[in-house]
Length: 270
Image: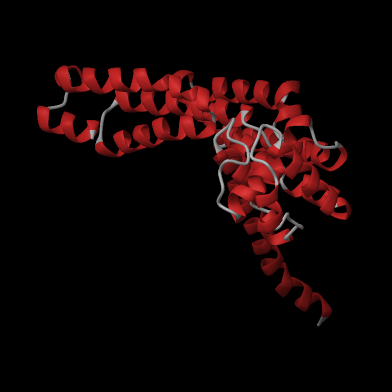
């Protein structure tokens, strides 16, 4: 009886082994077909862990002393004059987690008593950090999380743009250089406008290249969005305005160069 039962179980165990080998073979095949993307994902994962380590260990930078409070007050108060040297969007992105942490803030009555001079932002920032002394580590860490995500998105655009220009292997190499760059590892987690503006400029170049490669209404919308995003990241990005105007003029005057008729050109320009 024992011999017969063992013989009956053999086909089932063989079937399980065969199915397991088949599943492993499919996984290996899937991984080989996407090995470049998996390597890129691993590079971005390691970079994210490195930046998380920086965000948890390093104290706030000089810019973050004013950028973090300014971003928070931009969000909760809606007064965009707290720090008007830069557009509010990058600082608001970093301050998003503070909506859940609910740090202490200067009341509206106290803010009205502070003179609106060049020292206003520094007075507000000092009072913000003083009133949140016990939350210092929490505030400084969580405000850097959105910036880390933004830096990872920057790396994805680098890979996509380079892959479109030179292929997947070149995209992987360029992304590896990006994820190993000490400047990016140091500045990526910080709440400031440098990485965000660099990302916006590259995204604009990518959107422009994709549109010129094959104009369509959808790509025109993406290009328009990227053009508008650039000056929202840093005021110096307003330098792209003359190029945008020139591009619209060329589009309207020479639509045939992009294989568009006059009506399509006007639609894309709009």
